[in-house]
Image 1 (cartoon, helix red, strand yellow):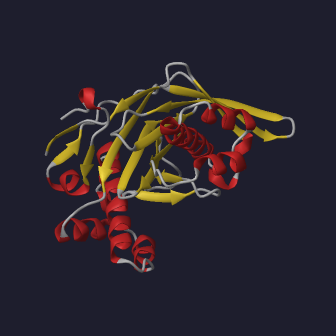
Image 2: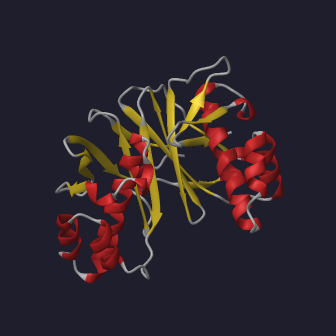
Image 3: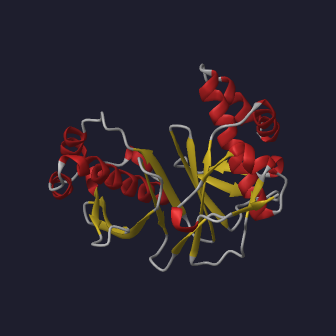
Length: 261
């Protein structure tokens, strides 16, 4: 099943393991493939995912106090391994997940070094977003819009003045969406660069495109060092926002498709 006119579909991890498999077309250097999963599964699904985890992943899983959090972590890591196994031909348990010096995950080769397949993941409130590309660094972010968040106070504190003004220009009902779209754009870009949100958000400025489908990024990396990039937004169900950032500007997003297993 494809994403079609409904945007990106979130498939339960249980279906990813036992019902559908990702439809993997040949990776093109200009394509970023994006899949979404709901972190839900029965005992069989959780046990299967757990059997694929590394020793370190299992140890981390045990540190979650709430069973719900532990199960979602296991499902997220297992689902990620299942997706990456389809890209590499490796068994999910044989997929080598490494962490770079800044904490960015990477895909290792069994014989050492890194594979050409790049990926990034984000999870929020029981859903997971995974971006996969060939030979091109990628960053993704997913957020659920929370109407109770005091967005204008946060925007005033963390965003650049121009961004605050852009959000404030919307009516009350549109301010939450605008705030979170700025947020996912910043986080996706900074994750792509491998620095995450430890970098001041106000120094990573977002300028929305007129069509609302993308945004330009102006990253003041240092006093005399500026980087620019492009972020593209994903068509998601109401109440959710997501974005993809990648190396260069000559890339497109391909929404993940599924086929019966």
